[in-house]
Image (cartoon, rainbow, N blue to C red; front, side):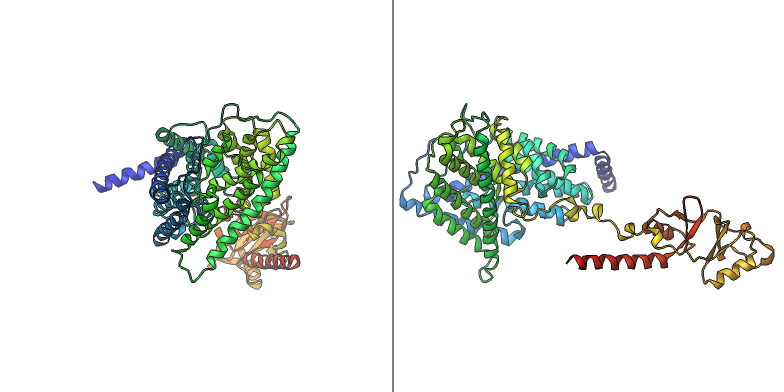
Length: 599
């Protein structure tokens, strides 16, 4: 009975893996279902822990998208002084859960998934999605400055890894399944299925795409969005933008303002990355303080900042929503202070080892930055409003620091529900991307391109022997005889040259190869001609071949020698393992010498 079940399961796996379309429709859909369910669970748990910890302790609640569009900070000073209690408690709980059960779940989940793709064959420990879900919900729910997209991406990526193993997929397909999980997780909870799918192919690299992951990611992201929306409602975008609120691109003069925003976003993005990893490095040096308690220290810093600037708490999306409805009209200098405070709060929340993503904080920092630029320049650009600058600021800033400008631009169009800002989004995001520079990415595990990824090492690494021409290895001083030479003379020639075989040629043309093993020593060798027993089809290569091809032939032939001929069939020489090894060593010495000269 068990053998029949095992056979049926093996047969099912084989059928699923047999066809590309069937495989990824099925696997992508499974990943999408889990991504959607995972997004719902995380979304719900954040709200639960927010009610239990932040609101329960302080009575203070942050605004939300699709909530009330008026907000009054009604809490007393005493209640606001309790905010550090909430953030410290969240840090303590998250620290204990992460470092007790899965230390890999610290920090922002997307970076861990990127690292698994490049360096761990797409493998993610089974417990990590669960640990990440709970720890991130506590961190964000208690007021920590972190996002929910990264954790959702890691949850779905972890399940993608599990599914690949369950269906007997190879390392390549496991990586693709894991990348599809990243897209499905972000696309579901950010309500941007297309942008999320493309992001999964772009976010792995600083200057490249994982094209093979695109179709599986689209399928997974589409299904994930369906699942998430079926429970929490389908919306056009993450934010509710007032009717007619977006002015769009109407005048070429406004491009100057968007250019300024792009430059500022790039410079602030560079500062954000440097500061973020500076804080992370600072906490890593705290050897005397247990990792269990470091997130609590980060929470304390965030809580103290939030007493005076509550806009740093949680995701921050609700504050951006208030800007869209004109209910957060701070002067530009105050908006810049919020930008700086959010950078500090995010760096301490996640850099200390707290669990949460950098996606939402990055978008919020960019949104406040765009609003502050509007506050300075609005008298000179009447065709642009604060919503335009806030949206473009969000996209351009995160597009720059994530090194994923294309997918983030597409997310911008999904977020606004149209293409009216597409041209400004393109300009500002690309300017910010180039100003920020390749070196500064909020995702430290990204690599430059596919060639730099261990996942594609075999595709791009060219063996040294491929670079060695057979002409640099050929032995032109080879022993040869004519077809009419008798075997007695042939054997003498072979023994004289201490080889196992000799080339048989006439007028320089190859006739065959005579091996000592082809000769019957019991016969009268003086009466048998070489042409009668030679091998007429010996292993041979043209002068255009490389040493790798010769080595391949030698590994499959017992003769120990390959004949090299030119285009006219003339024998140039022979090549054996000794000649290949000598040529290889010469090439290695050459490469080492060139590297030394470069240094």
